[in-house]
Image (cartoon, rainbow, N blue to C red):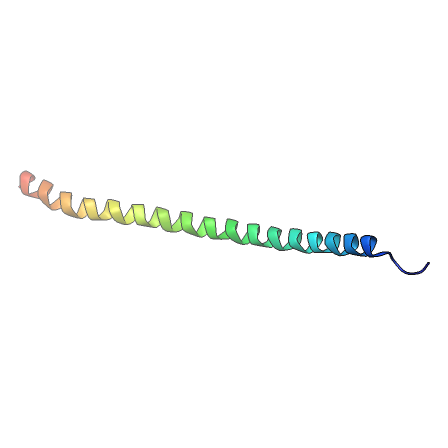
Amino acid sequence: MSEIDPANKALAEIEAHERECRLRYEAIEASLKRGEKRFDKLDNMIWGIYAALIAAVIFPQVLKLVT
């Protein structure tokens, strides 16, 4: 009776597969969170560029009015 019956063997393989998938998905989730932080940083940089462009357009117009 040293042999494992096929049902228990299949169950053990499925459980091992689930453990591996859990680890893989945790790594994927961590990678996505790191990427999200980078995109947030890029988003803030883009908003800063918008503000600089608007200021570059409006500032000369204000100078014309003042002088």
